[in-house]
Image (tube, rainbow, N blue to C red):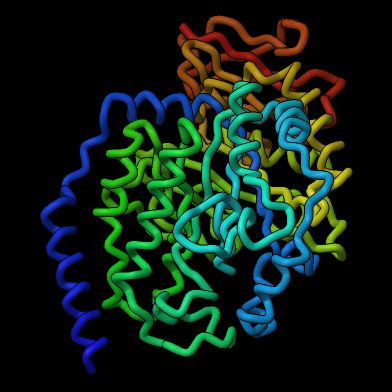
Length: 436
């Protein structure tokens, strides 16, 4: 009973502090606004799901999917020794794809911290024989290669007893369903302070796990204070939350999981599209964390179509890979990076720095736009021509992007009919339209 009243007192204190500290009306700083624009210009990032779960080679949700006892699961740490981890090699391979930023999982739902935190001993430096801060090495490699570093952080935890039970992780052997929110909330904020203090400029914090309490509508994550803390520590650090909802106050990015904005094939999207910068995350194969049985990698063409369609829907693509337990990136992933990079080297101008074009996505493809250039990406078309519903007098010139060959057009009041070249590109036939 005494512990109960102490917990309630601490909770009331945090609630009071939160309401006093956090602003209900978020107004982004000028640095934040500039960071949003840079984020949109970058268009392409790589997601990295890596932790001690990779040792089980069965994805990142194994702990809750198989109801693994958290104390037994924690023993994986004593055998985690990624001897072939090379941060510089990772970043160079990723940079070769044309990606402009990396989002690294600092702490996933299993509660294991992949950085040198002083908030618990359950981390890669203190709990493993490896004893190296891989995040610090990755941050240094990103800085050297000119790649932005974003950080994934889980709001939920299947290991800690002070995290209140949600709809996942109920069979992991934790003994306190109610948890102790004040201590858990403080733990998270202390870790976020470390991440935004010890690893240089961070492009974004990518939250996940809010949905774990969606069956408890009265649960208060106290996000305003947490968001204010992040923006105070690094004003230009963007905040995104994979909650599958319309963005909350204080967020700078809207994310869509396995769907383009406006789609809902995965059942996780379909929410209203905001005016914030947009990002779609998707896997290179079928799983986020390393799974030895998942060699079902999407083809380079499929991955490029994801990137092109994301840009045409005014969004970034965050493409995920799951490194192996020895610290190496999968060989197939490296090959895909190389092939994506070759295409981006030739065609990146039609992706980087663009926004979704004035013509909405069609069955044949999408458009991107930069200043007075409209790039028409024809991805799938068996017709000899496509119709562009643009005011005819706006169109000054229409050429094939790759070699500037003029294309025949027919104008009328409804728009412009563009004759397609006889030889279409297998991946993307790009038409450059100069507007005036």
